[in-house]
Amino acid sequence: MRNQPGNSRPKSSHKGLIIALSIVGGLVLLMGLAVGGGVWYMRGMVRRLTATEPMSLPVTELNQTEQQKVKRNVQRFYTACQKGQADRIEFDSRELNGLIGGLDDCRSMRGKVAVEIVDGVPWVQASIPLNDTGVSWLQGRYLNGKLRLNVQMKETGLSVTVAEIVVPGGEVPEWMVKRIQEMDWGTQISQDKEWGPRIRRLESLELNQDKLVVQTKKGG
View 1 (cartoon, rainbow, N blue to C red):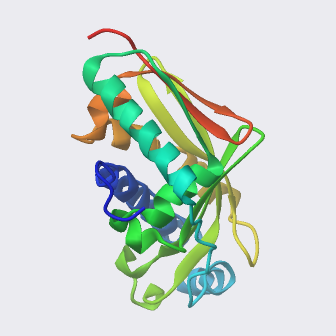
View 2: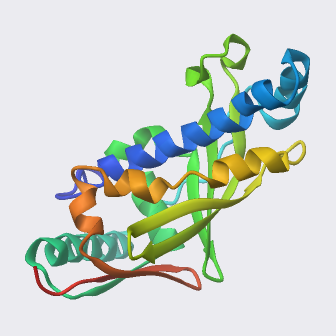
């Protein structure tokens, strides 16, 4: 799926995901300094919960038939949002990962981010670089783990929050998880200049088995 027409549009969405994941990584580590009691505690937690190398995730390569299907569905979504049409569009886990693995705009995410929807529950597996946290001894380290998400359409708009964090080397302290759960990525996406108007065109957003199902609104 290289350089296909229309495939550059999701760039801001993927960029928003990277920003959100980076914020999560920073919070998981930096909150320990404020609440944990000292640098010694922080460094011990860093050794347990982070790594010096990003984990290597499999890259999903869609075949030609799958690529054509995904391209049609993406274009259907754009058209429905632009023209105020009601449409129901589905993407399964494999198709979502094919978009991440195949788009040139997502090259930095290739092999580092994977989406999995299991029995209607969304997970994001990612390697989050911690170079931008402002802490010198986090340079070159990564938070490698899985995030279970809550994704809902509310009256106020899209809501995407973290329900659970799973990392190798131990458990993230409960107080850190609670702070992270206060963040709502959906608000950030809804404020994006390109994706905000599209989010407002959604009637509903469902997670069904291994599929993401979006329903667009009819009318202006």
